[in-house]
Image (cartoon, rainbow over all chains, first blue to last red; front, side, top):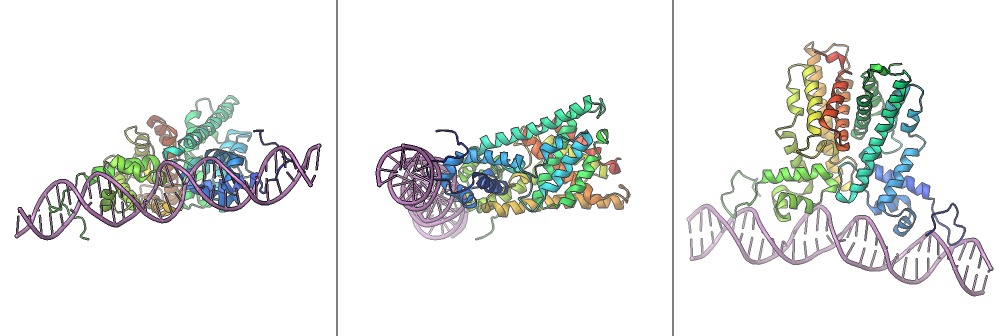
Length: 205
Length: 205
DNA sequence: CTAGTTTTGTACCGACCGGTAAGAATATAA
DNA sequence: TTATATTCTTACCGGTCGGTACAAAACTAG
């Protein structure tokens, strides 16, 4: 009943590290998506059995959502940090190049789990699908707000339509996730990022 | 054993139109993806039962692939026709605006089944996934070839990197499919298309 | 009408789905 | 040691998965 405290200290100790297990679950969801990842896939990768999974993470939905949080906060995440760059140009450049480098990185599944984790899916997955759509829209909203701030700071011309600019940026990044799934390399995606940047003359330096 | 001839003329006549059934199957695969679409979903939408489905279309994999062919050849498909435009500018413009209009069209599921039908999926779906990746790459190849032809015709400067240009175009279109899934309207996607076009000065008129 | 051919509906197959009940195992607290 | 708390393993639940066997139904050819 009590919310999982840091150390239980009483009762049989847990034989696995929940954070590591969550990273393993993320890897499975990333590769197979919500629908494609079975509990057997998950428990095998996590090295635990189903009752442990359910007592620790709730159910498949909640496990997925917790894995997504790990995804957003992992060391090589680029989206959040990019927003902290000082100028609009640096924000957009870091975001595009970060996606190019990261989506095609061979040390983990290709693309982005938030984009491809539950795109077309069963009705069972519709709650997760909606959660991912919300995350994508929130991401675009953050970019939009950041560009509006830049516009207020005189970093972007007042005549620029930043709403469309943010949507264009989101579109290119989401497309790059598909390209990574197609097998595009980081170099190829970086070329796309460069070209995409050139469509944004209003943020150039 | 004999390949399905136009009219059987002997035996019990088929009680449904295979082409219409295929369109219904396409609608289900489009909305739910390969993994998310169950045979129960499919047979219900198609108005037939499983033995009819299997005798007519083979199995789930083959049904999906046949539905994809219907998708590519349906009246409102924009990709193939765009390639036939006379100039590179018109090709790219028609393709971007076609995607913007079509992906968000409310008369059918949002986005593109070839992009989102089997992106992250189970191992069962891996054959279909590979087939879709191949289709996307073939599409990009066709664009590349078309742009190369335009370059040979003097329609695009010889200095332009058409390989990257084609990849960029593919990226934007694939991103627009995700945007359509996010709920973006045709108008919003058209604004993105306009902005994306501006990144291609080498094809302007 | 009969024989032959094809499709139909029903009922079923083994395997797997997400999820859980129950008791053995392992720790701390007294 | 004993009581208590927590996690472990095993075995199982009803439901659904993709796929099929079989016989009744509906047609044509003769």
